[in-house]
Image (cartoon, rainbow, N blue to C red; front, side, top):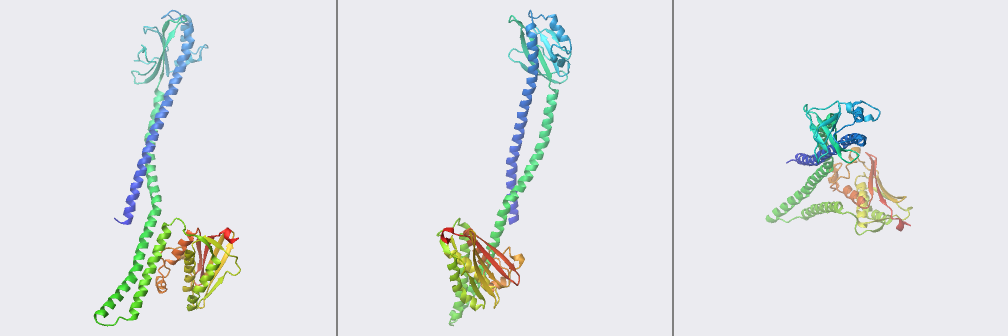
Length: 440
């Protein structure tokens, strides 16, 4: 399976899991919302019916006489639409409500003008609320309340019901909204899952590509000296079988190739350690003035052999201390100064400046060399990257020096910046946190 297919398959699985989990969450949330809203609406609906029934109950009960007998004044109230004694009597004339008064045997004594057909009139003893269906299919919510006369005798009961047409229509609208919105939400979740999976895997994909490229480049770098060493060894073996003397030049060439392999492996191990190391170990206050002065002395022969002037500008700078590993800092600045010398033509100049700005120490390595193309400046700190592969091999480099320098700077909580113009030289600026206590 190719890299793209592998990551596409993984991304699809991640998106599927995300869509499944989020889809189940959305679906469950939608159903819970619908259920809670239905409960609230049902409570509100029942409350309006119960309030109206309670009003009739409280109005009628003090005026009741013998059980099963209805007084004329009550009949007058019930028959008069919208009388002043109660504003709620007019409500019963609407098609939404109906009311009935019955004696204990279930005989209807009085009822509103609107009465749905097919509804039972006998109350249930242990149940106040009923949801009934008329012959035309309409649903009604009905409450049964017993009435007592002032002597405490059961006079009869009042039945009040309300049409559920509006209630059912509203619930049906809510069901349609949920039915239409949930698939849209699921589609949105799926698209979002695909996008988020791609966003999450992008750095992994990039790292995998870099690792694959790094492995290929490292194998290529090792293949060349190994092939050269093998050829030299085979030549030496052939000479030994032929009884010829193995020349010193052959052995020296083998040693050079072996040293090149050892250096490359050492650099790769160093980079591997910087990748896995969380922080610095064996740190101590390091004086950069002394370290750079030592480097000037040690690299002077290299600069002289290249006919390049090496200048160190630290004389007028107060001691600048950083907390770090002196050996790694030595490697960091050696790489930068050596690069400046190697890529500066004869007669050029490499200058190292040391500055202290606020809580930072700046070390600038500036040369008058060939410069770096603008399109390459964002890649020069990549591992095994070389602006000019042929030129780098000529100088013995494998494209790891700047990558190592950046890794060391970052381990010291610092950074490296580059400014360069093709044909005019380069300036590398290393910024490290200053150790205040040791500097004062």
